[in-house]
Each structure stands twice: as C-alpha cells, then as structure tokens.
Image (cartoon, rainbow, N blue to C red; front, side):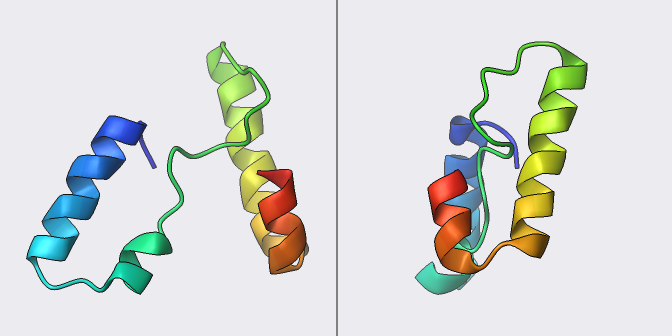
Amino acid sequence: MGSRKTHGKRAERLRAQGASEADVARIRAPIGLAIGAVSPAEIAVSIMAEITAALRLPPKQQEEAA
C-alpha cells in the first residue's frame, strides 16, 4: 500500500522490529495494477482489479497480471 517511497520506509521499520524478509515481501506495494490510472475512480478500479486477481488467480498468473 502507498507509494514506493512509503513502502520502503515501512519495510525498513518492519525489519528493524524483527520482521523477516519473507514477511516484508508479502506486502504488495505500490498497490493497484499498472493501468495508467490517474483519476481517483481509475485508481480505485486498479486497486480492486489487483485484489480480485489475488483472490481469483493462481500465484503464477498473479505475477503475470502485475
């Protein structure tokens, strides 16, 4: 969630608190599929598309969709 910069800071804090690399790697950031979204509605659609892919697609296809 959040921007790459925000995620980087979050990951650093988690590691400092003892989170494993595997745990940190589970966080998806930035959130949303890269569809060129600009407006709030488009960003919401890209986020929901990523959530739907996470729920419905096998892991291999999720990577390809991202």
